[in-house]
Length: 207
Image 1 (cartoon, rainbow, N blue to C red):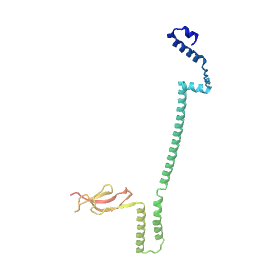
Image 2: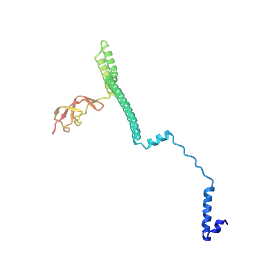
Image 3: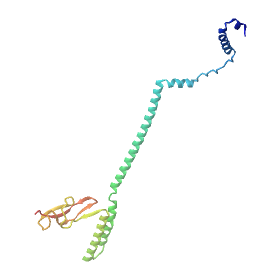
């Protein structure tokens, strides 16, 4: 026990001991050294300032929008060019179709022309030969028309009158049902579903 402890009152001795321990721990412990924090670089400072600068954010957004607008404008110009090219090709195809629309039909008529010229070149033909040649040429002509989807309109007697395909020339009394075809004066023709000319017919009068 130290001399100071002997002079203290017994009830103060624990406090004195605790104070000694505190001072000893404070002054006798090894000092700790915290490494210094490095200073930020200029790039880090600029990035930190830009992150908190609303003007820089707005400028960056504006640059992004300008880039997107330029890209959209380029896409629009390309699309316009594609449309114009497609339209030009379509116009060329239409012009060619109009120019050569009858090419196939004309080609199918050439055999008919050849037959007529060959028949006329025969000297001293008989009536029978003329008839046979005409019938053969007529078959060729009908075949050429059918290949080009040209079909005749020749309704048989008793067919219901159709104003889309028939043209009534006269109305005659007959025993058959009213408003029906009695006879065909001239055949009609249609190409596909379009009527080239209606058939000229006579129809029964209403009773």
